[in-house]
Length: 322
Image (cartoon, rainbow, N blue to C red; front, top):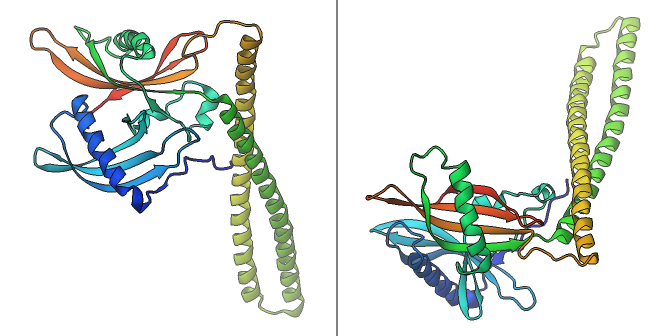
């Protein structure tokens, strides 16, 4: 399949380096205030950094890897950060964000734009109790005393862009089709060459028999060429099969996505009230507690999706520690 475009991160210009250090220091301080660290952490230095050019009306995003002093030991911490309204915002670079609820999105997951939102945001206040209910029901069900939500420490959101998904799927289908056609042409050419080599081998054996000569050198060379051709043929056949499968997968995803787009357009055309926050993903970093008198707290990273009907779905959850 054609490679999907990723975010065009690039090296930070030298003139921006002081801004990067400011962003890094702020990120560590803010993560400490929000209790994202399990122990005190002090910024040491920026190890590497890259940035994403700002969209019109937006601000650049910086991805920073830095050394942090934690109790006398150095640890690496990475964070994505950007400025909004004069304030630095945090975006946590966690693998769990790649877990998709919607099927077509599984092929278009490389350009997600996550934005920080306050933990007091209406979407967070709505989702937090659902997150607790879903975790208690499906994840903590074996606990004698189910953990309870203490508070949300950090929140981010993104909205699906089905037009972008459509573009990537069309490109993926077209790219896979072209690869399959290229492989088919290569297979045809290799098969023709293979037939020629086999004919040459047969003729060499007949000629040697007529002249009562030893054809071993010629046959050995031809056998080597035939073996190489068969190996190339096998490689191209595998490539063709994979490309055809990828093309079919993209085509099916396009059909499903088109149904979703049509449903969305019909809602608008019918003047139906849209559900606030529908088709949005929400990332919550939450603190829970378990136990009675000597309660123990722990953190959970939670990824949720709100579908078009307003139902919250638990897409992914994992322990969190930095």
